[in-house]
Length: 238
Image 1 (cartoon, rainbow, N blue to C red):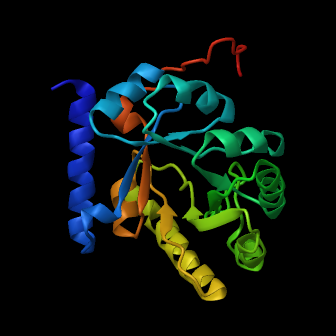
Image 2 (spheres, helix red, strand yellow; image 1 turned 90 degrees about the vertical axis):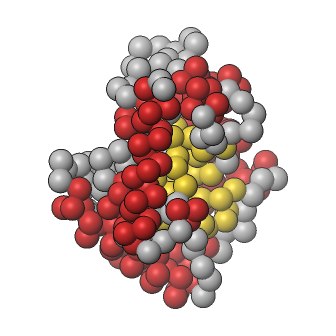
């Protein structure tokens, strides 16, 4: 068994075990392969093993990579989205996870109207209040979620967060728990379910699943070290 297949099998076993500990069905949690910096060949290899959902941090990288990979795959944008990339993001991704401010949602709505598109989104929440990370504060999320949900071209599907890095996953359990609570508070405000909780990465996805994650974003634990793939014609640092 090659390394990628072995990594995938181990991740799937860990996910299933975390679901058992939480009293959940394994089918309630999706694995997203974070392919940032990985060449299209790595994506194709993961797809051949049954992975169908991939996440990219940058619009331009995903835009260049997607045509080189099997057409059946689904792609989410999981990185910070600049307003000037809204058009491409809407056209080249199946879901936008990093919607981190009301003004961005309004710009996406404007472009989605022009393009006659309807797009699922997740709202990024900076649960831990880290200055280095983007996202709604919990207070702003609760104040603005109704306005975002009212945008007719955007389909609000749930919340996502990036937990602080730590070698001890238990330390970020309160972050994941708080995001789940925020989802429930938003559901009460909206009077409608928000089915997705995107949280947990290579170092802490088992804890995230125990706290209610429906989607875990895993890169290095699956692919190994990032390979810094550059799209054809990309400038250094792009």
